[in-house]
Image (cartoon, rainbow, N blue to C red; front, side):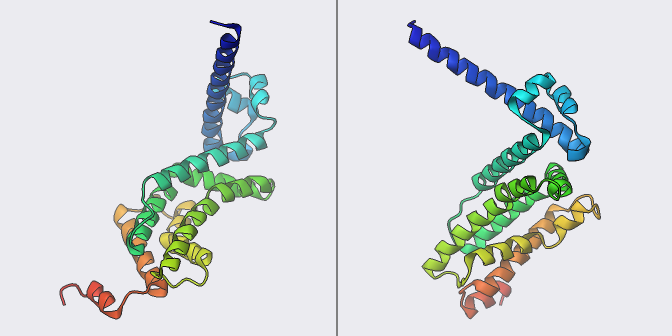
Length: 227
């Protein structure tokens, strides 16, 4: 093996080691932040949970705020990949919106997602960048996906949308219709799958009544299939 080949291999091994160590730290930080929130976590706690020294922790992250922001961005990116990977954004709007809304709700009601939201809300006033990071990598990412789809459908003439982005926000809010707030504030501990189904179906129906271009005959047939 030549000297250059050895150097390249060493560099690759170093990058792999750094990536593994960073992942180890992120996993430890996630455990600590989700269990104690931002204010309840310390760099000592995170180092202990990650199985690294505090000095090693500071090699990768300058502060607890930077670590939390990075964690938020990464977790939201992974969530977005799961959200997009589970559905196909093509086809009849009613079907596409239902699949998207249902997939979204499955993710929003997970305990770890709720814990993330609570932690971010608690610290966003003091550290706005953390709130911005969550908003950009989470809600705004989803809104971008839906807005692009709605814009394409409006161009085809299947939807009547003067403002696709506003319509995307409206659909997102309709999709969880207060259920997310009940969970966030501890009013209920969980929501049944059946309830999620009916809520998203109602959101799609209301959205299509406002923006769809279905004929009166098609709408009547859907509402009264036996008639």
